[in-house]
Amino acid sequence: MTKKRPLKELMALASPPRSGDFLAGIAAPTERERALAQMELADVPLERFLEEPLIPYEDDEVTRLIIDTHDRGAFAEIKGLTVGALRDRMLSDEADAAFFGRVAPGITPEMAAACSKIMRAADLAAASAKVSVVTGFRDTLGLPGRFSSRIQPNHPTDDPAGIMAAAVEGLLYASGDAVIGVNPVSGSLANLSRILNALAELIERHSIPTQSCVLTHVTDTLELIRRGAPVDLCFQSVAGSEKANRGFGIDLALLEEAREATLSLGRAPLGDGTVMYFETGQGSALSSDAAFGVDQQTMEARAYAVCRRFRPFIVNTVLGFMGPEYLANGKEIVRAGLEDHFCGKVLGLPMGADVCYTNHIRADQDDMDVLLCMLAAGGITYVMGLPGADDVMLNYQSTSYHDVCWVRKLLGRRPAPEFEAWLESFGITDSEGGLLPEAVGERPMGLLMGGI
Image (cartoon, rainbow, N blue to C red; front, top):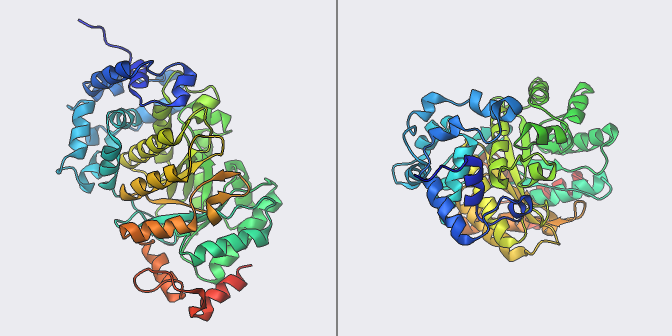
C-alpha cells in the first residue's frame, strides 16, 4: 500500500504553478507530478482536514480559530464527501445559493482551497456565481445582478483637493457604491482625520448612500475613534497565520477591540454589525517567513477564516501588487484571482478584488480585462475604480471607472440599489443605468464643484 503523503505536502504539489511556491521550494517540479497530486487530493475525505491541521493547533491562533469555530451541524451535509465529490456537488445543478449558505460554516479554508486546486477556471467562476453574500451599511452590496466598486482616489501628497477631485470624478462615472477608500501617504493622525472629515462632508452634503474609509493600521483607527473622527469602516490587512498577522502588528483580540469600537459609533443605518474592511493577498505570509511550508493559495484561504470571524462589510484580495516573486505573470494572476474569489465566496465572505499588477510583472491590461470579466461573471461583489486605472501614489495598475461601466453594460449588472436610485435622482444615470452627459442638469455639476 502506498503511504499517504502529509496533507501539507499534497496540497502544495497539487497547486497550479505559482512563483511563490517555487520560491518556497514546495511546488511540484513537473506537470506530471502536479497532475498525480491533484488526482490524489481529489480522493481525500473532507474529515481528514479536521484531523490533520496544516499548521499545528497548539502553535497558531488562526488554526485554533478554524478548528474551534467549525460548525459540525453545517458540515453534516457534506461530511461523507471527498474533495473531488465536494467539487462535483458544488458544480451540480442541485447546488444553489441556499446550499452554499447552509454548508459555508462547515467548510474550512483548507477544504475550499483543496477544491479550488482541482477546478478549471470556468469551474471556479461557475461555482462562485451561485453564491450570494449580502451585506449592508448605507447601501446593500452583494445582491444578485449587482456589481459594485470602490473609488480609490489616492494622491501622492494626500492633497484633499486632489482626493476630492478623483472621488467626484468616480461618482460621475457611477462608481463608489462599495466604499470611497483612500490609502494615505502620511500616517499622522491629523492627516488621517483631515481625509476622513473631507470624505464624510462629501457624503453627507450630497446624501450619497455609500461609506468612506482611510486604509490605515487598526491601531490608528482606534485612536481616531477615541478622538471623535467620523469612522465608517475599520480597515486592516490580514493573513493566514498568527505569525504573519503579528508581522502586520495585529492579533485576533485587537481586531475584536477595533470592531467593537467601530460598532459603538452607530454609523451604519442598514448594517447588522458589518463594519470591518479587510484586505488580503497571496504571498503575504511567505514574505514574512510565516507560511510554515503551506502553499501560497491555502495560506490566503486561511486569511479568510480571520475575515469571517469578524463579519466584514467587504473583503478584497489584492492580486498582482506583491510582485513577481509571488505571482510572476498574467496567467498566474488570473488563476489566483479566480481561486481567491471562489474560496472567499464559499466560506461566506462578501468578496471583492483589486484586479491589478505592478510594472515589473509580466502582465498587461489584456490579462486584467480577462480576469475582470470572469470575476464579474462569477458574481464578484466589487472591484476598484481609479482614474485611468493608474494609482499615482502606490504606482501600480488596477481597474478604472470606465472598466466598471463597461462591465455593467456588457453583463447587464447594476450598482447597489440605494446607490443606483441616488445616481438617477442626481442626474448622473438614466432609468436604465446608462450614464448621462454632465451637462444634462445642474446637480451633477454642483456635485463636481461642491465636492472640491
